[in-house]
Amino acid sequence: MHSPEELTQRFREVGLKVTPQRQAVFRVLYQNHTHPSAETVYEQVAEQMPTISLRTVYQTLNDLTDMGEILHLDLGTGSARFDSNVEHAHHHLVCEGCGLVRDVEADLDSLKFNETLPSGFLVSETEILVRGQCEHCLAQDQNRRSQDQHSKAGA
Ligand SMILES: [Zn+2]
Ligand SMILES: [Zn+2]
Image (cartoon, rainbow, N blue to C red; front, side, top):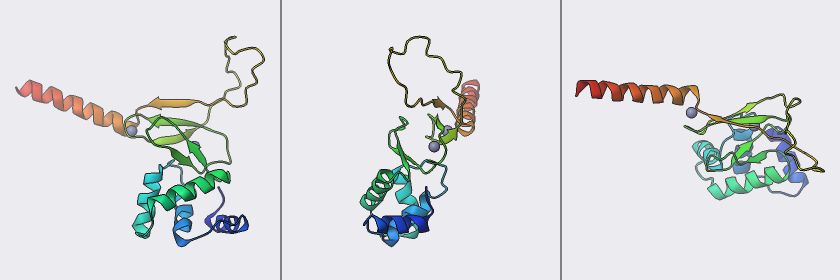
C-alpha cells in the first residue's frame, strides 16, 4: 500500500474525493499488520475523528481494494479483513479464539496434489490458511481449566 500522502495524490488523479476522514483511514491502514476489519478501522479512526461514519470507512476500503492498494480477505472470522501488505505474496494464520490474523510465509515448491488436481487445470494461486489458538488464548484456556479444577477440588 502506498503512503497516505501518495494515496491522497492517487485518489485525486482518478477523481475520487479526498477528505480528512478518508486520509485518517489511510493512516490507520498504512504499515498496519493486524489485518483489521472495517469495524476496527472505524473505531480507530473515530478516536481521532468522531465525525466519521462507518459508511465512509466501508466506501474508502472499497475504493482502496478496487485500486489494488489493499486486499479484502475472507478468513472465516465472521467479518472481512483488510490487508495493506500487497507488496509480498504471503499466507495467513488465524486464531480461532480472538480473531488474530498474521502474515506467514510458506515454501509451497514441494507441495503435491497427488493426482487429485483435474487434468488440464492451471493453478494460478495456492493459499494456505493456518488456523489455531494464539499464545494468549491458549493461556486463557489453561487458566480457565485450572480454575475449574480448583473449584471442583474445593467442593
Ligand atoms: Zn487468540
Ligand atoms: Zn496479510
